Length: 323
Ligand code: UDP
Image (cartoon, rainbow, N blue to C red; front, side):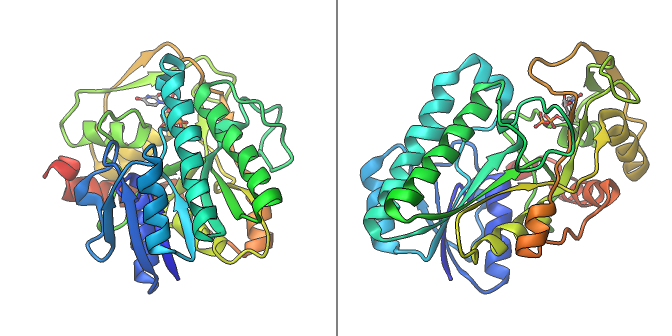
């Protein structure tokens, strides 16, 4: 298939583009390089530098390429930033996304895989979180993604858009070529690995008084390659759908740090800090629906496998895409 990967210079988009290309698909990448990196662009893909906020360029790109499907990764995704600057999140994640949808409909492109998030749920009443769990986001980031999910339903009803919305839990790990390098790193695993690389003295633990066995937050870390596989399966669904995407297991912040110590051989000093605003204590996915309906099978079941791949990439590229 010919796939337009929007946001293909970012962490998740770059690895999905790589896996698509490995499987013989034709890939074009549209990215404004605001969060992504030129060096994260797979050289086998055609690259169009452009911004979804530019309605004309977006429409022209779709009309010219006429892909079989679009994968949409281009978004801002930091909870904390969204609490400070909600306008950026509603503008980029909703308004700019509408330009993409309208361009698709005008060009007759009727299939979309959308990057959604467990942040659309807010703090759940129970875990694991399945697709029936009520969605009550507690920050503008989650709200913007939920709003876009609702827009997608209307574009299906009115324009016949077939979409799959994948609600990621905590994407982590790396491929051989591409990994996680954000301009401003906030995520736990890359921050811990920067300590192991000697680039930071310690890692901070945000909150040690949660109602969890060791007092720190629990997250469901899913390997980026397993996530990419889900996107490829999503290209063949007969109808629109929402799927939660995690491993169904949870690791606490302390467990992540301990795993990183074991794998890197570095003592990784920690400093305990107060809770980070907006962090739910425990987020674990039920991915039964995507397993049942699309036959998705995660290959990297353990946190060890995830951290090992991330550590390999960070050792190879200690300055990330700057090197
Ligand atoms: N976290 C932490 N120290 C850090 C970064 C993150 O203790 O330097 C915690 C964070 O509070 C959360 C978990 O690690 O409980 C995962 O955070 P991350 O930002 O990686 O992902 P999120 O779950 O927010 O999407």
